[in-house]
Image (cartoon, rainbow, N blue to C red; front, side, top):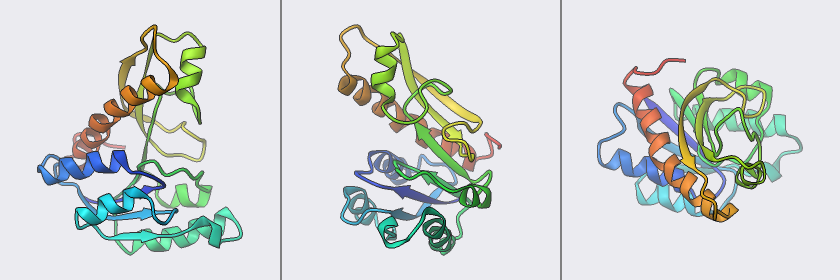
Length: 192
């Protein structure tokens, strides 16, 4: 299964995927390309260090989201992916993009969806008095963070948690959750 990862920043989830791949733990999945909408981010270095092809496509070079997404589709399709993985890609995608990659596009979100969609999930979980947070891998649909849930992992919220401490523990959980989902998709253990 050919995988393209989209990133916007440091790429810690990407690194987890690369680590699993280098250890032969990603099943039949193989990361064949990494695309960032931001030049100079550390995630691109992570990919280059693993000898993975990288590309940058800046959304600032396009007048609107639709034109950017159309160019992004063209760039992604160069790699002939079976799966497109959003790994910290901080762009809301157009319906055209999402439809084009229907049932081939996944995301990891730092909450137990459907709770706390969007940004600032850790702060909102603490402020709501939640006792548990976590991470969710889901199929991407036109509605933000609303696609069918593939798998979740719970992370307890401790009484002394700050937004930062909770974020660190949830991210650590993501680093096992995301690769395991991609492995299981590649082995046919999960279907859409």
